[in-house]
Image 1 (tube, rainbow, N blue to C red):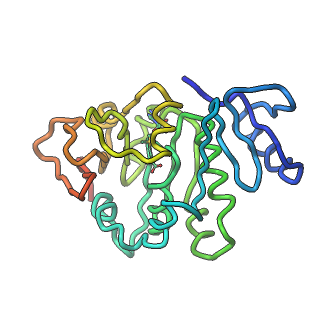
Image 2 (cartoon, protein in one colour; image 1 turned 180 degrees about the vertical axis):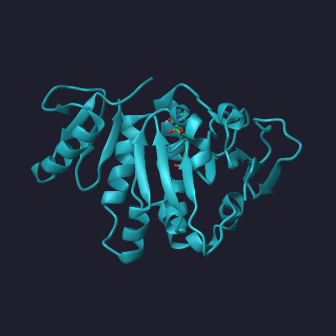
Length: 242
Ligand SMILES: C[S@@+](CC[C@H](N)C(=O)[O-])C[C@H]1O[C@@H](n2cnc3c(N)ncnc32)[C@H](O)[C@@H]1O
């Protein structure tokens, strides 16, 4: 699997932060050596992949619009069975840039984010770290923990989570409009992975799989529910959910 060769500090003010991340994720701090794939830590941290660059800010760009309107995420709320008085513990088995997880955390849910790519874990860490110091952002940050691992390591503990959330979303054969970030991820990650089928066999309570609206279901199960939006849908499977 492709991943970063290390972390570069471009601005010495961020050295401590870079050391903290290099320890947590067990990656090298790069000095002047040349690297093709690395993260530069700065006030805006960047994942470099050859000439391509990926930023992940929660405060700017397209995603910030989703943040300001997070209460209007009715499809996502339906998908996880959101209730204003209940905090669910959700396992996001395909963390990516942490966007869906962050919306779920703003909605008061407790999220364990699993992402097997270290570069992407660090981009999520940095997006959270750089959020403005506001009570609702701090609450959301405290609701999220990020783990760098293949989520299959959690198959045997699926029953400990109220919801398993999976967004594989890369295998479209149709020419759907992809965002720049999505284009980057497709070329950077190279290998497509989808742990849905394995989680379906696990002892989950509620399994939510995000799909492109007209994509085939990953799993044949006539008891599944689907919630449809204009471009995506959520397939919901339930085993022993209260
Ligand atoms: C489409 S992205 C998810 C986007 C995410 N929902 C968001 O809102 O940012 C899919 C991600 O899942 C990760 N992934 C795929 N299979 C995985 C697995 N078995 N364990 C952990 N991460 C996985 C990939 O590395 C990729 O970053």
